[in-house]
Image (cartoon, rainbow, N blue to C red; front, side, top):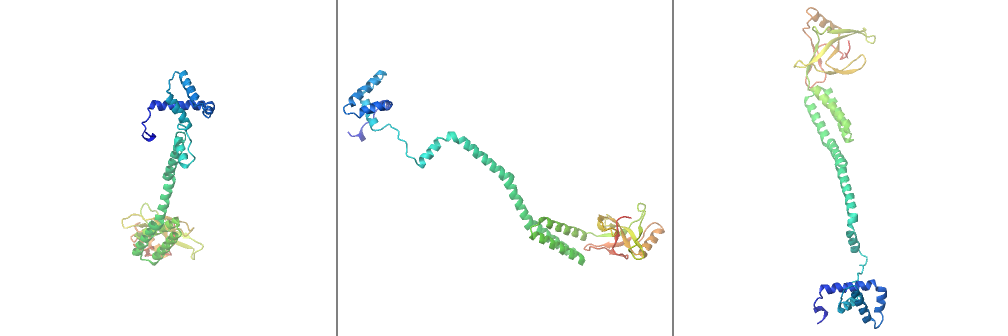
Length: 312
């Protein structure tokens, strides 16, 4: 019967043979020299039997012979594998207990840092950039177009149309330059113009118990005749509400929004209104101008240069 069909050896014999090999390795320097000497095999086997007998272990001679043979054949010897990528990977895997937790901790920190950066920095920055792009390419251009169309439908004066065209050009130039702030300023001007055009009001001379003055006279060395006449007026819409207008003071060029101001008129119109009030303190013909929807400038029923004052 050959080795391929031989029955397997009992486990206890295999273990004893491995122990024999281990014993031989511990005494390798002396015993291996004896293995190399001719005719000393039997003596070596007897010596091993004596070693085990001294330890109280009875080992069959067949097992000792098998162990000696296994040692010569390097059957139970460990031969380190040759260096290779798979060997390096295996060693790394086996040593994961030392480096695994630190590496996982670092990866976790990097992951958290990446998430924080994405959520706290990169995400908002991307959102702001996208919002700015949408504002410049969609929102603001749409506002400009809508205001231009609305003003074009209601404007009835050439000055209003020309002023709207200027603001529209300013807004679109700013948008081409990707200057959102300048574009918004031009849009704000368009909105103010639209609001002015859609408002209608009357300009009335003030009078009554709470209005001690309905007019004032100014002496001015720079004006021929040295005298200027002003009626104190207010703007009132059809619902009786006061309407604020941007008024420029011709005496010092200051300007502010107000519903009451002094409107310069001719001496004849000033005297007519004064006479109207003198008889019963009521001005029967108090309305001296109207501003219809679509117009920027009021239509006056009195002679006026358009000059105004804010203090009297």
